[in-house]
Length: 327
Image 1 (cartoon, rainbow, N blue to C red):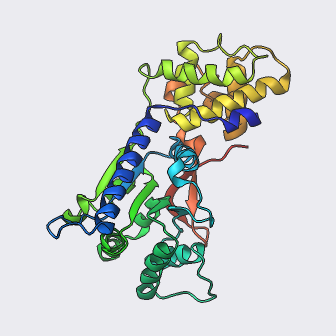
Image 2 (image 1 turned 60 degrees about the vertical axis):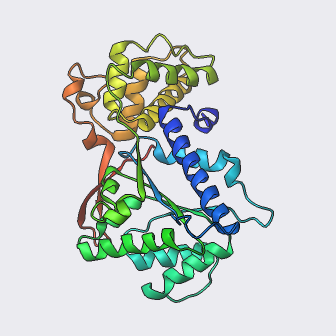
Image 3 (image 1 turned 180 degrees about the vertical axis):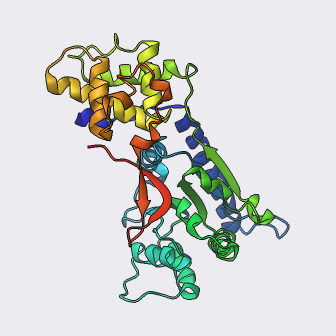
């Protein structure tokens, strides 16, 4: 199980992510080189831009990003331990002040007080420059969508725009989150051109059956004492995709858990029942709502089992949902 959870099976999403980061690194080389070499005055300064990585919960974007950030040689730590990229998770509830203070603390600024919004962002930019950080990655960036009034949203966009346009030390952004993140900067034409979107698509049956089968086969190679191939009929693959909301990340977890269930029981052949047990353990869904057991699986709304409603500090529903964790 440890071996299966530690490997990453590349998909087309990884290729799209790699292309976006390659383009961003090329942009940094050009902009920074232009500054250092004293380019002619007519060489326009473009500054940084933002790449949005968007997908529903369970699509695998966080895992793909972590793997990419860990493996790329451009992001390896320098001799002093610093890195050219800094990753953080957007706070919730979200405000411009809480994000700025969180970044300042992570970048090494020590204080017991909350720094005012107007002061913290110049400090953050100074800290980024001091530590040689060129790229800031903010995960769960859709939390900024919690700001309902347009004025607050525009302040967030204007602040991030200021980081990207800073002539002395421009910053490039990678923002990852749920599909609502695509609304970022759509109302500002000057910001809109600084945003590029990479969207992880939802899988479809039967178009992606082969890709799912290959994923099962790859995990099966790590559990060679179990026959993982015979179960992968079109019907079972369809049930697996539907039970995972057609999201690749959830599919991966369900395959891992089903193989783990098979190994735990001492069986030598992976079957539909192992998937059913793994799904039931994760969701507590009754048999009639288990897509691996019900003959009418396509009618089951699996989102009710896979997602949980979020509540605020007072226990009141927020209207948002998060993916239920594995047990």
